[in-house]
Length: 585
Ligand code: PEP
Ligand code: MG
Image (cartoon, rainbow, N blue to C red; front, side):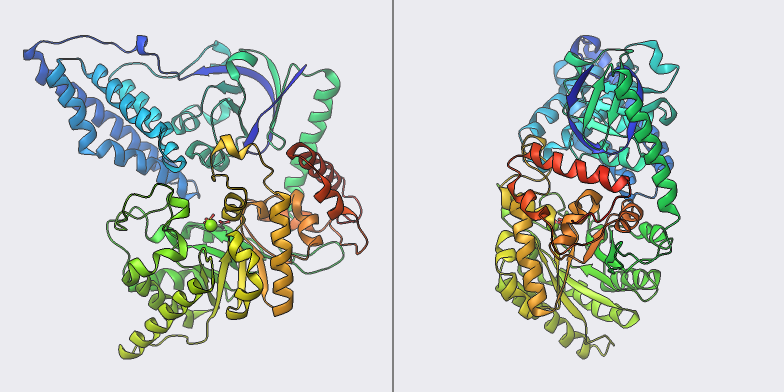
């Protein structure tokens, strides 16, 4: 038995047989030959046909992906289609055919190689595109009748397997039939890659960071633990028994949590906790209707602005915000103003090249440069606020001057609305995203000027640890709930208590139920989480009590490594599953 430690990007368990899948691009498999001048037009026509075939396949996939509630799934394939529709890509390839007199496959391979190498050296946000280009390369080559991925053993085509491969592409997640895959184990990957998003939406466990070539071969029996990131190869009888029991419990829990949809979120000792949803697209409204909840704690409005040629109009936005208010039946809806950043930059936001986009024009800093766009959003929000409990959230504030910028924006918006004789709600609550160490350290001061704050732990983690978000190389060095962050959380909670302002945790750590005893211990009482995690968190809360005397925090702060922290939370997690006594003890 061997235990390999990787990182989980999609949770769940699997026990089964490995099948190595190879989608590795091998130069040698792609046909390379020269053509004559007379054959050039024919070869370009073949290339065109290959592109059309790939595009038509992509359109079919987009149709299939429409049935998933996750809008991101569709976006991934729309992006792929956009890339295939980019005339520059086709022209580069046809240019090579003409100029070098080479076959279409050769030109496809060379141009994609150029793009892949270029994106490999870019900022982490763009590096993610490497996998998309790899995926598209196999799509176009396959359409030309060339190389594609394959199982290295026939077993993968006959029974469900744990697919082991160098990398996971969106193409693999979608094209290897779901019923044939128990889990994916890969070498490359990351929590925010498109393939991980897809796998999560399918509910397939994924572990990355495992050297597949050296450690796994076809027909190996393995256990995949998509919670701890472990891959256990050739497990002994005792371990396998232990995991089968764990899986049984996990499945039971799913069923049990489903019975708790209608109760209010509260702890074992009946402390009412606010539990809200993080929403990024309108179709997620359907999911939240199934639960008793405390509203939308974070409505990311970027979906209205991204992948469009021009910003949405004030009226378009008004309709959308009203839809959200109606969909939450009078519950608060916290709408975050457009939060642009390196990975979410609308095409019409023309910025000079930024060498380190996370430290440059992002969040609050974009308002002054694109004032009209924000003004339209502010006006639409003020008008929509007449139709429900709408609250406004300022993204990535670093200091008080950022708050003033927003206040001025809303005061200007109100002036214009008055002049235009449009009705609006003048009494909205405004809050801030605390997601920079500066804002956390100054929370006491900032909270004087606003009505509430959300803790954005995703960005707070990257800025506190100086470790880029979504980069697996640095991601794996630190614990996602680093003690330095919890110290900052404590400061923010204290400031909230002094000023009697709600502090809501809305970053991804809030979607991990193991951490709740600690969150509750430090006084957090409001959370906004991913819809998929909502039922589990609500149901776990019921097992957590809050004891005044407890050495939990002391233990947490004295854990000296990521490993020690993992151990600490794993024990707690097992404890919750046993329905034990006060968790925060
Ligand atoms: C965060 O940074 O934690 C957050 C919620 O904002 P986003 O993930 O949209 O940057
Ligand atoms: Mg953020």
